[in-house]
Image (tube, rainbow, N blue to C red; front, side):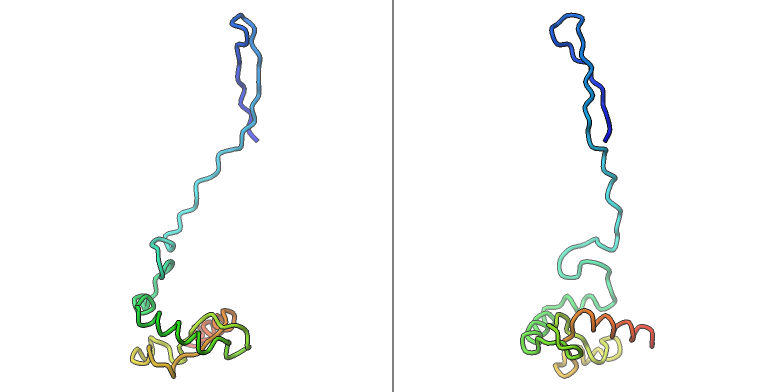
Length: 120
């Protein structure tokens, strides 16, 4: 805590009282995070497929797929991610194909994406 000394004249005479008021230090300014600029569905870092993932067609298909297949195909936990079996970059024509989708939990999806990134 920081101390700030103030002199107060209490009775309009030459009588002064010294008070020390403790205040919180100024908080540092928030860090700049350029990858968080923007808002809405695709907030965060932009990928080359962000336009696809922001599309109404994808969001509707994803919602229907999760409702129909709510369980992760690898571990059986509740699924939260609809994953493309054949990556969108590899075959964009299959991006909205029901048979090219699978439901995964975040943990299994991150593991699969990591394996794919290292096996390019």
